[in-house]
Length: 508
Ligand code: FDA
Image (cartoon, rainbow, N blue to C red):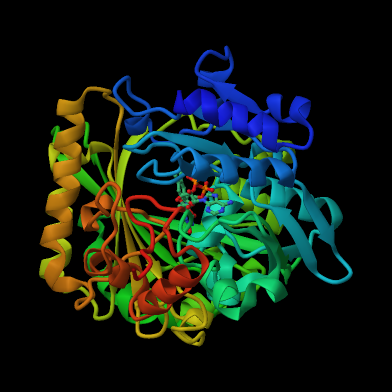
């Protein structure tokens, strides 16, 4: 009956009940499953026993958000907000209490103003739409957002957002200059009316805690007409360990125009059936091959980079390239339900920040884990920090992992099997690697990236959030910025309407 009351409330509350009925999907609606599943990325959260929303609302105007918030509060339903659905723990579409999903699929216009180098981007747009719309108007402007193009702008910018340009221009959240936001009372706020604390909090403090971001105004950044991508792979037998040791010393000092990373994975060697570890050193460079080679020969001669390892392209082609879509039409970037054909659909992700180079023993431990049977589809990536990341103060936005980091680690284990027993063995593997890495990574707190949501770090209880409990993961994600986030939350949503397993708690 709550469900019926909620629906009745929506139609009474909406100024135009016909239009809101077009964007409501109840479980009886034949499109309900399609709408729900269309952007579920991690299939761990699309099983038959996964809790499903009572209703999905896909607002097409701001009054639909206002009606939904009002009626959900009135009838005791939780709201989960979804933009691109990439949350690694499925928090934008799964809850353990009766809930509704507000999906911003219809809120995705992108207005690019080349002259002023800004764009207004509605939160439901995917990064691919943003990159495409910019490229339509200019090939020498870009946006400093993530690599994977189906990521939603709403969740991505709310939690930070780093990609090919982050060492040159910072994170996506560093490039926000205004926002349109709706609070728990249905007020539509912009940068000025929301005040500096809330404007600070929504740019990196994690999605789903403060209200709903409707749109971001973002700064566009200059990119050269030609950029260069390179990648060099070495097996352990080809001196890869020594190269990683060297890379750890220099990668964070390479020019801001690069985003050096090291990707490690294993595969079954056909000759003797044993696992081979392959290590790949790569980067995008904002410039030509001729400009890049002397830099690499001077700074990292051991890598032996040559012109043959490099490929020149435009910035927008680089977006396709890093999505493994070379030579595909640019329009592919508009496909929000696109899925890469390879790679597991079930996954567990973790992150770490590294302040001191990892010793050879530490690296060997990592390689040994990558040789485990469960790691056949695992990938571990070191992403060099430095550049502008070291020059932005820790409290400029809630994203606090700035100076002092050599690199970030991304641990990804993914698999194809659907059953829970098999899933558990991969999840256990990722926990083992994470435990093994304890001596080599940041401490007190052991830092983690909020956009790589990991519920192993802790979780709010159903119904009640505790400051002490939330500080455990809150300080890992936000360091000392956590306390300011709690203050903002206490002011903007004191009754804690917008909440989830890792939302910022108010102080009661
Ligand atoms: P989703 O819709 O699931 O939302 C994530 C969180 O934000 C949820 O808590 C949700 O409630 C909240 N939220 C969503 N929309 C909101 C809104 N409008 N207002 C308020 N809260 C909102 N990260 C990165 O930095 N660089 C990268 O290259 C990648 N690559 C990558 C690849 C793949 C395949 C995945 C699955 C993920 C990444 N990520 C990433 C992580 C990604 O940035 C992170 O999952 C984002 O939160 C995803 O944003 P979505 O809107 O897609 O997620």
